[in-house]
Image (cartoon, rainbow, N blue to C red):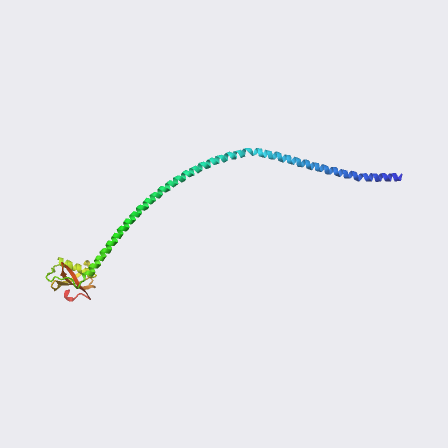
Length: 232
């Protein structure tokens, strides 16, 4: 009897671990099934939401396409307008360029005319200066022609007095408005001499002249320290 009970206990003890391991397997299988079902449910739910989102986005995409067409038309219109404006600007710039060219040509013509006038004036001035220098240089001549038969007119304002005064101013630093004629006298047949000075009497000259070939010639110029007393 004892052995039978002992054998029963052993049998019972041997079955209990086997039953426990089976329970563990069942539990793991159940957990895996639950996880699998959760994954399947998650996938289905995401698919539905994706379809819903796509359906909700259909109209905005269409609107965007329409708007893009309108934008293209507006862009084409703007391009056309910009091309027209560019053509108008080009025409205006060409007209301005033509006007500027014409004005430049006019200015160049005026400048050339001004330069020609200036050149003419300068040439005339140079010629007059050369003439004056020639007259001044030629007015002092020791070998001037002489007409000993000529009798000068010493009266104030006579043609001889005016010609003598002009000859004196041409060979001295004096001028008619700043010259005092102290004496005009005979210096031989057809010859005269004159004593002149400026109004301040700081520049005093004795000038010898002689008449020949219809005019007075200066034959010598002498600068004096002051006006001689006999001519005052």
